[in-house]
Amino acid sequence: MCGIIGITSNKEVTTRIINSLKKLEYRGYDSAGLATLKDGFINEVKCEGRVEALEKNISKTNVQGEIGIGHVRWATHGKPSTINAHPHSSETVSVVHNGIIENSTILKKILEKKGYKFKSQTDTEVIAHLVTDYLKKNNLKNTIIKVLNKLHGSFALGIIFKDYPNLIVGARRGSPLAVGYGPNENYLGSDSYALKSMTNKVSYLNDGEFCLIKENQVEFFDTKGNKANKKILNLSQDNQNYDKGDYKHFMAKEIDEQPTTIKNCVNEYIDKISKQINIYNLPWKTKEISSIVLIGCGTAYHSCLIAKYWFEEHTNLDVTVDIASEFRYRKLKFKNDCLYVFVSQSGETADTYAALDICKKNKMKTCSIVNVVESSIARDSELVLPIHCGPEIGVASTKAFLGQMLVLYMLCLKLSFDMKIINKKNYQEKIKNLLSLSNLCKKTLLTDSKIQKTSRTFIEAKGSMFLGRGYSFPIALEGALKLKELAYVHAEGYPAGEMKHGPLALIEEGMPVVVIAPRDDYYKKTISNMQEVIARGAKVLLITNKSKDEIHSENIWETIEVENLSEDLFPFLTTIPLQKLAYYSAMHKGYDIDKPRNLAKSVTVE
Ligand code: G6P
Image 1 (cartoon, rainbow, N blue to C red):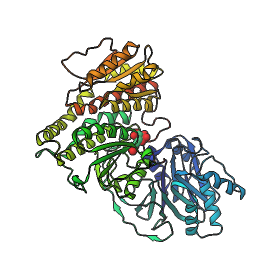
Image 2: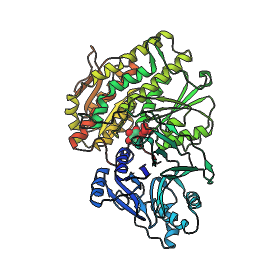
Image 3: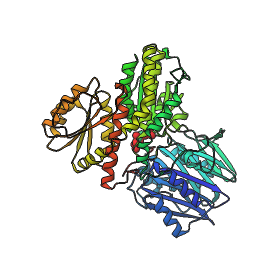
Image 4: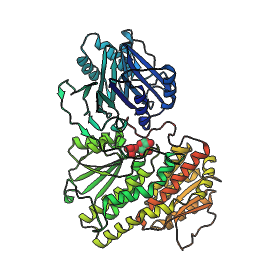
């Protein structure tokens, strides 16, 4: 992944590079660095850890310049360390890189034979030396074309040169890259979010393109070096809230925001007077669609798994769900009557983007469900359905998960209605239920103190399990993922009915097990499976819904009851206690909740 920023200006840039890097930290936060050019010298400052630490180093070193590049890293080649932090520089060139150079080992050998000395274990350093080497015999443009041709893999690059005092070169293959336009200055950035405080005018590089950015001019070129024309896009005004307010962590704030984000999303999509779902802009006729493939990574993948149940129940479509990193390499048979739906909070996840790209190249119908509407996935899909959550800063996804499920659910109902599968009465009944969802989420958020207490048991145990059937199975996966991500304890999500086929052997005295069993069609079966784990010593935390009916089981350790609503909407409520369980577990352990170790918010490498 990693985040890139570059500024060429007629005034000092260091502070603004630092500020942009803070915005890019969601892409990686294991090390950070910047390089500026001043009086014919490249000055580099970098350090392991966060941008905050870099800022302190800069104030000591007083690095300045009117042109510079900066980077936040998520390690791929070489451990997180100051030496491996970007930029990587030769005497004449400094490079920041997002992505992976797959042939770096062989390129390194060739360059070492020529006498180039390597300081880091990164794949990026080869780019600095390769550019330096080609510049000896080529002009700048030919150097860039030749270097890009030599590199295998995916990348977004920002390069500055000792001998070209106001120039930044940007290049893109696979990883996204944007150019921003300002008064007497121009910018390069991994995304428009990093540039928004400086400009609302941007262009995006297409795959394979490179650009030369000077303070008063930007030129774009295709792979062969032919000039490329670019549209300048106006970004929407940024009045989004990036502040933690009184919360200790973004994650706590984002969990609490869910009633509001659900309400906003429902308001965007539901016409309350006609009781219709406003997805009128389908670029295809519904009769042209007979199957649907839902694709995502991580939490977004889990939202797709839940949607499979909805699409199967409410439509006649054949439904397949796929993990993007698997989808992109499978030998697929593309079908014209299939709709491919890509779910991604950031809209920048490399695997999800690659899956979309393959579908586009095969001329398939594509739709994306994203939070960031200016993202690469949104820009390149035929139909974009935003989830209207506002910025999600915590690395572990919470409100975006509910937003993804909500839009998938509404898309499902809309297709069902247009395909004349669901009748008007049921359709409007379901829409009515959606209108009450926000309020029920709000009430479910009150189930707090019990979770705080139980979370201690989860962090003390050597492992835990999350079980559910039907809609609750993907919720079990999501609950386990949240606990792993945040509290670094082993947690496994499993279909409750599968336990007897192996995992039951893991259950021992005192092992915490979360059972998600709202009173739906699967309830009785799940409760039986719950008894099987209790009989083997598990401490069961049961998540069910409020009901007059007693739970027919003994020895349940703790029960949390979410609000009551129609069966197919239970996943929205049963998720909430699991988000909190992970949050409090991480808090007891004193971990960095918003930036868990080894992870990043937006994963722009394979
Ligand atoms: C990363 C994040 C996860 C997220 C996944 C997919 O792994 O840490 O929280 O679910 O990427 O991200 P996307 O932006 O595509 O939803």
